[in-house]
Amino acid sequence: MTPRPKILALVMAGGEGSRLHSLTTDRCKPSVPFDGKHRLVDFVLSNLVNSEIYAIYLLVQYKSQALIEHVRQSWTMTRFMPQHFVTVVPPQMHHGKQWFQGTADSVHQNLHLIENFQPDLVAVFGADHVYRMDVRCMVEFHVETRADVSVATLPVPLGQCRSFGIVTIDDEHRIRKFDEKPACTDAMPGRAGHALASMGNYLFSTEVLLAELKRAHEAGESDFGRDILPRLVNTHRLMAYDFASHAVPGVAPYEEPSYWRDVGTIDAYFDAHFDTLGAQPRFRVTNIRWPIYASPDQGASAQIEAGVIQRSTVGSGSIVNGARLDHAMLRRYVRVEPDALLEHCIVMDRCTIARGVKIRRAIVDVDNHIPPGESIGHDLERDRRRFHVSEGGVVVVPARYFAEPRTPAQAVLPDHANH
Image 1 (cartoon, rainbow, N blue to C red):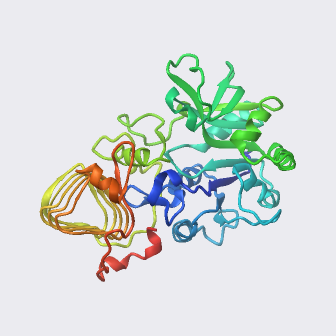
Image 2 (image 1 turned 120 degrees about the vertical axis):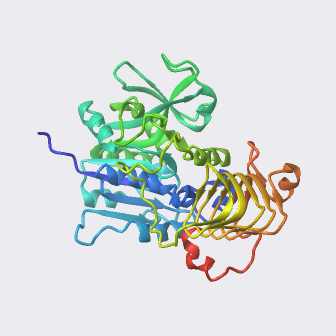
């Protein structure tokens, strides 16, 4: 039996997330809340831990305090297993007083972590996608194909190619071309209207990674997708791992096979939430055989005093009293008062929706007290004068825009839990 390779995971958690607008004013993209009680970073960390990869460094940069607090509270490994850890690593500036200049530079600035751990393979994964993945399948593929680098891939519509690294492969899945965010590209064989895209998840043989990072640093290169991978196509064995080819335990037949979403825009982030709703959702978060772990929740159970609720979620400590919820997602400690109407909304922690409020297709960030009779999402021209409105017409109400001192019950959840 072939011994299992020793693996170190480096998670790229430094994303600024500017396309998420006010949702990333006070927090980095990986720490943006998702669904009832998760953050975006919980998906990659859960995938790694479920895949029995327990040595994980998160390389952070912008507005990282909320992420640091979340990891400290939710991802602490026992001190009796020193090889099992999830550790946040800010820029160390060993090679100059500068922040990370790109994905490859962020790893190069932390070469000592790799050299000290001495892994056989290094997984370099992104921190801001919604998906499930058994990384062990990718490891097996990497070993069996004798790859120097494996790149997780999946088809995307040609219209989205500007947002991804696009790969061209041969019949053996060897990558023959890597084009970072091209303006246009040809369709992949056998899939009209689609191209094969990198998911931003890479598996490197350690010796190759160390040598190429040092070479890239000397050449002034700083990014995997833009610089290193296109060059390595000509000198090394780069393989495309088919994300759709493996199965994760517990996925129901009605779910979308190989669900994966880049939630880097307001519309993509908004739509992904509603993929988790319903009795037969596209992506079921509550898969007990492949859990997506969340922050500890000591809140009281939600209370429904009265109202009409259709395909919605109500987080712990929340109260709905005589309101109507239609495709609404309430996180923790949200109060919805009589005659309020929420349609296709995401309402984050510690918000109050007062009597008679009407909200449609909106994201309400934390600590907002929407005053009685307010209307959001029904007059987009008026909304644009106050808030950001996405291309798809989703209104984003910034944190604390409608401010009011919190009640003692609302104050139970600490600020850093949702910034």
